[in-house]
Length: 380
Figure (cartoon, rainbow, N blue to C red):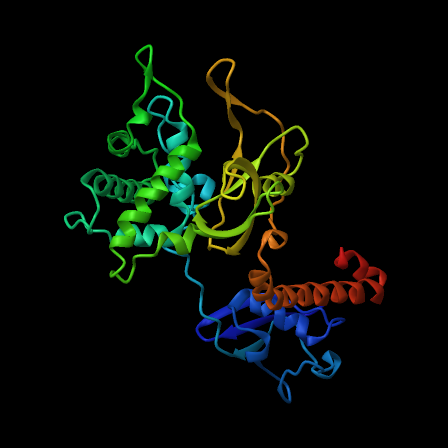
């Protein structure tokens, strides 16, 4: 195994062994580790010309200590980054929250979990945040009272604090404005603020924003609350006793999931909520009678809100009681069965497109699974 000396530019590398049982590419790789010149750029002068990758070592007559010259340009030396990599787990807790996209939390100011959950829920709606950003501090819309205006400003400011902070936010000003506009949330018992229902807080806040933001509709960024949350219902009102029948239309901001002993799933509760009984005067009978109202969704919003109706009025104790029954719900809710014939007609085409896409995806999986045993695992 001969030993040679390599001269490259101004550098000399003595004592380099050549394994003549290996092709010249192995030798060139050795030189690459020493000089940084890739093998494809190396020109090594030997007897008879330039060393090629398929040259037979025995034809070169190499001797120990022989000098060989190499020409070639080395790869640019990669500089170490000025700042090393920083892993998320090494960041301070505040920066970790920002890097992961987590929103700041809200302090409980004393039985205010109902309010905090309402704020966090609405804070997750980007269109609402955009509408609030364009809401003016000083200009009140026509017909908007001062308390509603102040509550809307407080909502906007609280959302801004949540977006800009990684630490928990104390929504004290919002709470003050909420209680000023809706005194029921300031009720106390034994000098302690009482617990409240999140749905009531959500409903009141949505109603307020629907009044204030709608009045600012001339602003480009002001999204209509109805477009975001409004649900148009059409109802058939029928009296079985008199045969009277009429139709009604209304807009609501949530669907009700009524809970009873036979409701185990959200779908069943919504079905109960869309069919109710009411007592009113029948013109043909000349007295009160029982009417059945069956409602159907005629227009859907961008964000569909569902309320689990867990509270009812207990006459024996003259107070609210909570229903603790477990009700299952899906991660994706299909309300097609609850829609009017008119809306179902509009939804047929997009639903068919979705089904075709799912069928194509399923067909692709079947093809992959049957191609080979290796692809069966991929199909799963």
